[in-house]
Amino acid sequence: MFRAGELVKGFKSRTVPRERTALAIWFWEIDRVLLSLIVALMAVGLVAVAAASPVAAIDRSTATITVNSLVYFYRQLMWVGLGLPIMLVISMLPRPQARRFAVIMCFLFVLALLLVPVLGSTVNGAKRWIDLPGFRFQPSEFLKPVYVVTMAWLLSLRGQDQTLPVIPLTGVVTAFVALILMRQPDFGQTVIFAACWGCLLLLSGVSMRFIGTMAGLGLGGLVAMYMFYENGRQRINDFLGIGVDQSVGPDQTDLAYRTITHGGFMGVGPGGGQNKFRLPEAHTDYIFSVIGEEFGLLACIAIAVLYLAIIVRVLLRLLDEEDNFTILAAAGLTTQFGLQAIINMGVNAQIFPSKGMTLPFISYGGSSMLALCIGVGLLLAFTRRNPFMGRHTVVKWSGR
Image (tube, rainbow, N blue to C red):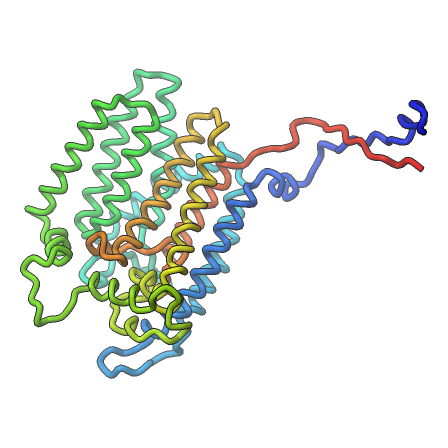
C-alpha cells in the first residue's frame, strides 16, 4: 500500500507553457471537425468534376471530344490547390482583422460589380464576368461572403447604440447590389443576397412586424419580376410548362431530373452515364444530376447530409457564443452556404426553376471555388475557440 507522502512524491507537476507558435495556437483553436467536413466536400467535388468533365470537353456539333476529357478536372484540382491555402490563411486571422478584411473586400467587390457593364463579358446571355489577362472572375461570387460579414458588422452596432440607422443603411446597400445583379441578369444571386439580409435582420432582433413587411415587399417584388423581367418570367414559365413548345424537347430542369433519376439508388457506375451528355453545363449548374446518374441517389443523399452536417456543426458552435457580431457573421455565412446548396439541389430535382447557381465546393469554377474558400476561411476564423486560457497545471505519474 502506498503511503500518502510517497503518493504525492510519485507525481511530478508539469506546467504547460503559455508561449506557443502561431501555428500551434491555430491548430488548437480551429474547428477541426468543420474543416474536415469542408475538405471532404472538396474531395467529393473533384470526383464529381472528373465524372462531368468529358461532357464539358465535347463539341456538341460533332459529338467528339476536342480536348483532354479530364481537362476540367485538372483545372478544378488547380483551383482547389489555390483555394485551400487561402482558406487556411484567412482562418488564422484574429476576429478583428478578419472583420476588417471582409469590410475592405466588400467595398472593392462592389466597385468591381459596377465595372461589369464596362469590362464584363457575356456568357450564355448574361454579363456577369470581368475579363483580365489570363483570368476571368465573377465579382458577385466574391462579394457574397464579404457582404454578409459587412452587414453583420453594421447590424451588430445596434447593440452599442439603438439610434444608429444601420437597418436602413443595410437595406440601401442590399437594394443597390440587387439592382446591379438584376441588370446582368442574375436573379439567383439576388435571391441569395436578399435572403441573407433577411436572416441577419431576424437574428439582430428586429420586430416581427418589420420582418412581415419585408416578406410582403419580397413577395411583391417576385410578382413584379414576373410581370416586367423577361428573363425571370421565361424561367418560371419553362418550369411550369407554360407556353413550352413540346416539339423542341425537354427543358433544362426536365433533362436534369431525368439524369438524376436514371441511375436509380446505386448509379450506373463511374463513367457509365449517358444522359449527362444531354445536359447543358453538366460540370457546373447540373453536376448534382451527374452524381445521381453515375453514383446513385444514395450518393446524392449522402452529399445532402454532408451539407446538413456542416450547417449543424456551425450552429452548435454558436450555442455558447456571446459576441453579437460573431453570431451574426457566422450564421449569415452559413445561411449563404446552405441556401446556395439547397437551391442548386432543388433545381436538379425539379423543385425550383433554373437559377444558374453552382453547388458549393462541388461544381466546377474558379470564381466559385476561391470565393467559397474565402467565405469558409472567414467562418473558421469567427468560430475559433481558445482551449488554453492562461497557464494549465498538468499532473503526471512517474511512480515506481
